[in-house]
Image (cartoon, rainbow over all chains, first blue to last red; front, top):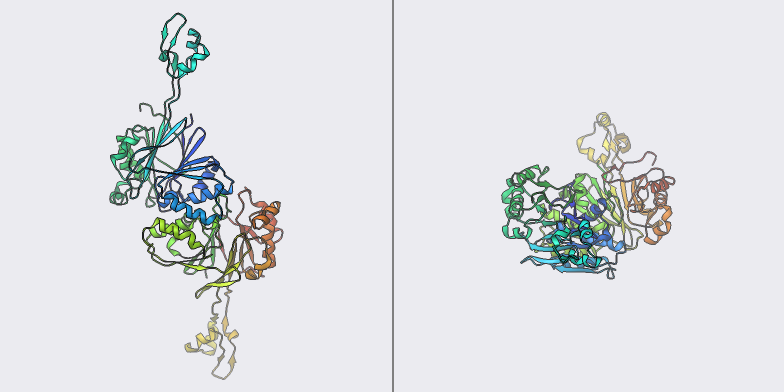
Length: 310
Length: 310
């Protein structure tokens, strides 16, 4: 099953000439989840071929400009393109106070689709979305203003019946779904054949967590424990430890320590401060603690997958 | 004297993967004038090395999103960078209704610099800015909502005294400024020496006009007559004539016809619709009418100069 993350932006608040502010898209079957929406997100979506009409759910970690300034442009483009489907935005409830006056200014009448605002809980972890294939949770981070991380969990899928066993025990069609769902089978000679003997399940549900912006804080480690892929901000290196403290941001070391403690499969880092022309220093610092770390770039695509031995 | 235009964005409302919405910077000695500010303008400024602190005057042609969505990001970056100087914005008076609620949302207290709003006149041409070197005029265009074009005129500079003449007629220092300013000179033998014989002036004041967005309309031709460089939008080619009419935009043919009638020196066109993957068709259409036409690209720099024979 598809579980694929596309990076649209990697910079922090100050603009740089070649990086965009935070935005990522998680693509699961039938859905594209947009996570944060810095200025220029719609241009990046065009560039990396993420259709505007496919976005029905937007997750906003917090209300700093570099995570929200792309919303009005994206929504305006959706209006121009004739969108009619509901758009769900998961964010601090105050986001409406930012967006509504802009929409009222730009459009004399109501726009032709509904924006449905889902307020986040900044006190504790919460399930915020669920369909047949994916569950999404928000959980509080530790930043200057209320901020949430997000965890996207693939749901387990039913095992497959082993064809040779169907043949061997002559399992009727009417019993098969029940066995897939966990049932055993009584063969024609009265023998009990266990579910585990009849089925195989190579699929393992995968998970991705997004943590931006936050300072190092162990309070959210349980919310990201064992995820297969963790995005964690790493705005600074340890050379700017004090600045990281005072601005409630993480260093490469912080991000890697979180990844190590939460025993994640793979760590990707971004939200690099404009003061680092080259982020190698941040990456090396993280890799020294958590070797399976990668610094993200615009346009990069990650297949979320189980890491062997994880 | 420097009179240099840098193109930051060339697209129209719908985003494309490789173009930015409208923004241009005119650089004259000591000043950078920003004209329109589509989403991503600050990124483009970084890319093309236009310092944020150097922008003190922003001219906004009209209040459609693709001309204003970059303002809040740019202003936020100015706040982050510790700006204290006044920022002058020339636009429809309603712009405040768009920007103020956003600023109030983002900043608990007043931002540390003043934004001074200068309302444009959409009925007639008006002088909106003047310093020792440049005068800026706004003039109404013909779009779906109130829209102004802008004309930037270099002021004439005083001629230079010809050194050989100073020597020949022994012109005292005390008389020289008066002669530069237009006076004649009476030589020691009583002979009247005319200003024109004593001075030389190779400098010719240059001018640039910006027309976006507008449909073809002869009403603004006098406002751009004889400018050395004209930027005129050319959203469509004639194959979309009806769409141009209904959306109040110009075709390549329209832009060139305006340039021809206004007898400008050089025409540059942009604001290309996303439906044209290649804008050659728009350019060729314009060049057939006004040969000295160029299609603009992001990052291009034009020296505004007198065209020979113009």
